[in-house]
Amino acid sequence: MRIPPTLLLAVGLALGCSSKDDGDDSTPEDDSAADTGEAPVSLGDDAAVIFLHHSTGGNIWAGGVPEAVAAWNEAQGTAYAITAIDYPHSPYPWANYPYDWWHLWVDGGGAAAAEEQETLVALATDYDVVVFKH
Image 1: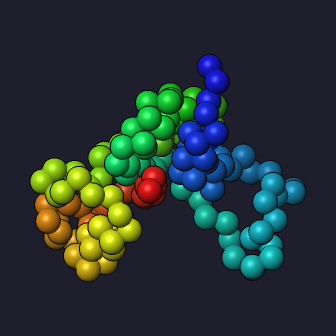
Image 2: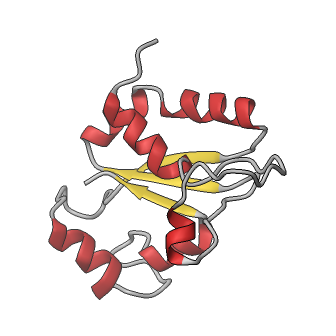
């Protein structure tokens, strides 16, 4: 199966920051943590990921994202769960402009739904990683 580059990017954004710790501290694959003095971010062995998309993102999802995550879990011994939703969704108008995201996530603000849409605060509370295709 050929995996499209956009799928790899989406999965990479969701999963690429983490790797299973095998206890070998010899040479890190990514030395950026050494440059900043900060420890690399780790999702641990399980994480809840949500993939927000509007239209084209559905094609990315259908291109094999769930299968790629399942393969990653099997190879790495992790238990990442990934969910996709249309965003924004009905009853919000079929609009997908930067303003809409700002309006729902920033202007709408808090944990309560903004115009019956999940806000970034609510999503970040329920999921460890929020990936969106815009």
